[in-house]
Every structure is written in structure tokens, then in C-alpha cells.
View 1 (tube, one colour):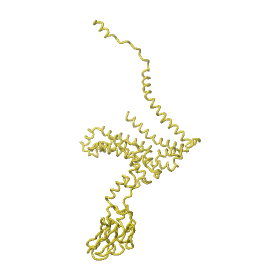
View 2 (tube, rainbow, N blue to C red):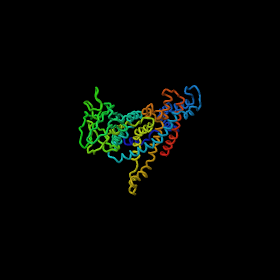
View 3 (cartoon, rainbow, N blue to C red):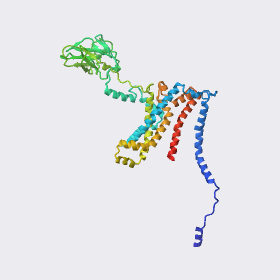
View 4 (cartoon, rainbow, N blue to C red):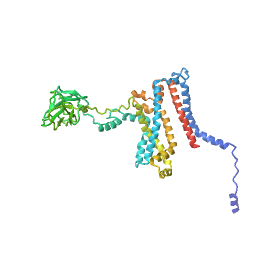
Length: 449
């Protein structure tokens, strides 16, 4: 029994026939080809064939019935809109990649130093989760010129009003012959007023919507010894009234700046009207004075910056794109920062380097490969930028904001049907990509060498 068991245990395995030479190598290639075939098919159908077909189409006329050689390419530099698009793309390439990389670097460093890093990362990265077309729609609303609608102009208006208070009225006119002047130079009582006198300044041509909400029934003040009193009111009574007389249903104008000037024209004092339009100057010496509603009363409120106008549309687009792309740069650069050895940074600090020197001479050089990735990726991205321009730029400003990709689409598919010219624009844009694609390939090879 034991001899049989030991014999069976010690028996050699059956000899199998060796595979023919090269079979294992071909099997490996077949497996690799099986995985690559779907990708090759999709690349051929959706990239290679369209690229070849587009180049061929660019050599024909817009109708496709005449071979024109390279006429479409020479026409690129004589078409005004295409030339503008080239200039705008140059601005995009000059500003956006560097701006996104710099912002991403700053944000990535901040996330390592603030306690609320998670919330900060979420806020910066969130725009990346939506399409650039949606980003354009969002910023188009934010750029509305009316400060009551546009967030950007509302913020500017808040800061401006904190420095320079707007006037309480946009405009007004004298209501009687006793009052003269204009909002630009000041509206004044025609007759001089002495100490102890009263000044009645009636204004008209004021729509009800422009009256301050705190306005109350106008009151004719009593004279005050040693002072000058007065009232500024909306001299309009429903159903008619007497110009120059304070009557029922007529409102005083609060917040009006009233100036007391000497007979030579110099300002002696100023005062603000109350809710009922009354004002008073105390301690007025004897003499004749001029009472004037100052022009600051009619200082127009901030009307908003025309961000979507012809002059500012390109900077507005750049700001919106930077807002949407900074999150990508922050995440990539943040991953590079996490990979840096802390021992190197601590060694630099131990040697006496300041935080700025550590950042400039240690951190940035170590992050150079990552910064290059972000920079080149952004160049490729801005060369093909299209959807944010389409959704953000209004029709009136689109000629000034146009880019190459948008021109290709409009010439070919937006009703112009200039397929030959549009194909030439497409191939020109493809040629712009080639240097950066080569740079990327060389970088990948150097990293994997």
C-alpha cells in the first residue's frame, strides 16, 4: 500500500507538446489587437476620416463643384471677421494659460494653509462640473448692465455708493418764475434771502417713481430769528394747484443738499432737507444770501458698466473662462504639491530660507512638470474655445468677441453654407494645434524614458 502511494506521488507529469515557435508572441499581439480594435475603429470613423475629408473639402469651392486649390486658405487673411478671430485667439493664448496656471498655483497653496480647505476646494472646483455653455449663460446674467439685475455691477455700485453718495433725484425743473437754474449748475431761489427769512423752492418734472420713499407732506416752515429756513418740495398737486405755493398732497423732498451762498457766490453753509422737505441754517449773520439746491442732489446713480459691449466683451469672456478653469489647475497642481517631499521643504527652511524663497526656489522648480501640463492643456483648450463665446457674447458684440472655432461654425453651419471656406478655417485651426501636440508627445516620452 505504501509503495503504491509513494510511486503515484513520485510519478512524473505527462509530457505535453510544446507550442510552435512564435505562437505565444502572436497570441499576445492578438490579445492587444482585440482591445485596440474598438478604439482604432472609433478613431478612424470619428477623427482620421473626417480630418482627411475636411482637408479635401477645403480645396473646393463652397458649393463643392469647383476645385480651387488653396484659394480658401488665402482668403482667411482677407476676411475681416476671421482676422479678428485670429487676434482674439492670440489674446486668449497670451492671457488664459498663464492666468489659469497662476490661479491654480495660488489656490493649491492656499488649500494647504487654510482650515476650511474642503469648502474652498468645493467652491473653486464647482464651476468645472458644468459645461462652458452653461458658464456663459451664468456670466451673461452676472454681467447685466442694470445694477439691480447684474451681480458684478451691483458689487461695483455698492463700493461706489460707499465712496460717493448718489443724488436723491435724477433731474428736476423749477416750478415757478421765482426759481431758476438747472440740475447741472444748481437750482436757486431768484431773490436773495436775509437772516430770518424763508426760502420756498418748488421743483417739478419729477416722476412719482423718482421720489424718495421717505417723502412726507411738504410743510412751509416758520421763520427763525438769526437763521434762514426753507422747504424743497415737489410742486405738483393732482387736479391742479398754485405754482410756488406749498399745498396739501404735495410732498417734500428729503435728502436734498441745499447750499447757502454769500452775495459774492461763495458757499457759507449747507444743509440736508428732512422728510417733509424742510431745512434750516442756524446762526446766519445779517446780509443777503442766495439759497441753491446743489448739483450733488442730481448726481445720477451708478448705471452699470457695459461688460457685454464691444469694448469689454473679450476681457469679460476671459474672466468667465478663468473662473471656470481655475478648479482644474488647482486639483492638478494640488496633486503635485502633495507629491513633494516635505523633507526638502523643511531642509530649505532649516537653512534659513524664508517662505517666499522656499516657494520660489524649491516648490515651483519641483512643480515645473505639473505646471507645464496645466499650461499646455490650457493652450489647447483656448485654441478650440467656442461654446462660452456663443452663449455669453450678445449678437451686437459677437463680431468683436469672435474666435476661430466660432467662425468655422458660423461660416459652415449657421446659415452661410460656406463649407469650403469653413473647412479651410478648420484645417488652419488644426495646424495651430500641431506644435503643442508635438510638445506634449515629447514631454510624455521624456517622463517615461
